[in-house]
Image 1 (spheres, helix red, strand yellow):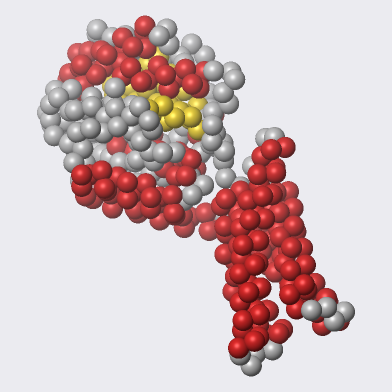
Image 2 (cartoon, rainbow, N blue to C red; image 1 turned 120 degrees about the vertical axis):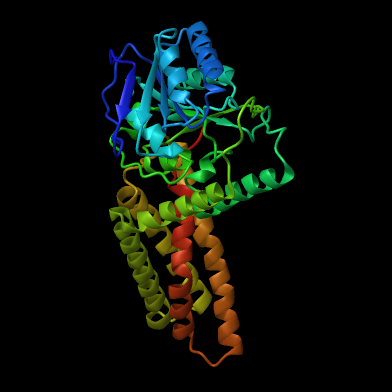
Length: 391
């Protein structure tokens, strides 16, 4: 651990997270602050007490964004009282998410955590999060404190804020089902993650929400959640603004669009194209060459395309996400089969309708609908089946 408990950063703060850690430190907890002079001392003392009582070796890292209310001065004085406390003072940067990554860059623990500095996250939940990741029978990569599980809640929130939070969660599940769909509280700012799950990752957070970035870009396969009650702020005013929800939306859209530039997308599109060509070739052979009826030809060709898709997505496109168990492999098979199968049935019904009620030829109808519906089937199949699993 660094001998100097206070670090001052001028200019852009470092964001890289190394894989190396100090085996003597289990948890490095980052507390990002701005104008929290009235809350930080109580919070730090409580966190230190909770972790010490639970015999969890730790360091507490306050990252302050040059608060004008003297937050840094309060923390500096506390470092003489609490030996595990450190302060990072950022002079030229602000933003909760980047402050968290800056703190993790300077951290030494095997586990990296974050908690708000306003005292609204209960410190007694922290040992539970750490314990869930320290359990050898639980292979989770991240432990998230959730307000939306039984046993948790936000009793002091207004109806409008509850509605905004629920709307943000629903929107996230629609845009990023494989990321946001893993957690009940994607806007949580209270969690602990294993260092190796995010070490070396190119984290590019937007605004005030870091969990989305960790789930989307980290090597996260399994999630465990712990309920908690959101507490009333004792001093100061809430920093939540309407613009934070806009930042959340911007972050969602960026995470949704950026994977389109990845190598996985190229493989995914290639598999989709090959499956489409195989489907069309088999249909043409059965229907036009062998003279089978249209429905049976389309059904067999469609199923061949589905099985081809499953095999190549599993063995090639998403080879970095191998099935952990036989059950997981069957889950993937069923997920893709359902997504494609439902579309296949709908496509068959529409083919027969168009041939009966229009002057279009069978081949024209089949290939038009095949090209029009295949991309949706591939998208649903991959999102439902090749996503990290959750405990």
